[in-house]
Image (cartoon, helix red, strand yellow):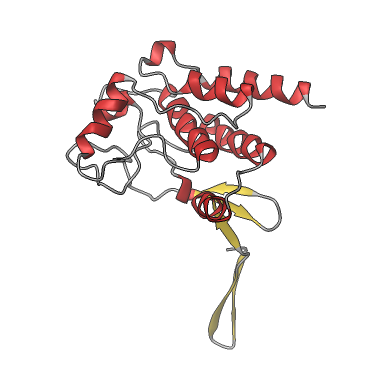
Length: 197
């Protein structure tokens, strides 16, 4: 929403058309295409800035449905107030992807490296056009929890660039002490940008 105003006793809203990352992924799957790497880099850069600003708690995850693209080129992230974002294995739904880091799922006092995991999940989804962690069998959501906790990652698609593959592999590390920090991700983005000037 851009603005609201009252006119003749009516509340008027001005809206800009938006499209979510989930919708873009669905459209790419339908057309048999991939998301452009330039869009992927722009998206992770924007999400990284939001994570670094401290606007989102490490226990609140950002999903592909909450990343919004606006016609004016802006990328925003919506979160629901009061949504802890944390999911247990018993709460996991068959059709719902899981973006939470192992330490969030295990309720182990996560820090900003949980955001790095979340960013890795979104990056994987942009590359593979499917979530990194969801019940692929449709019958065992507990297997998703186990895959996350044990570091069983699906392979990154071969169409991904080496720098994006490397970034996914450094973000989706079960042990937070070995996972990229937000600063490490920033440096990867800066290195990518310097190579593509």
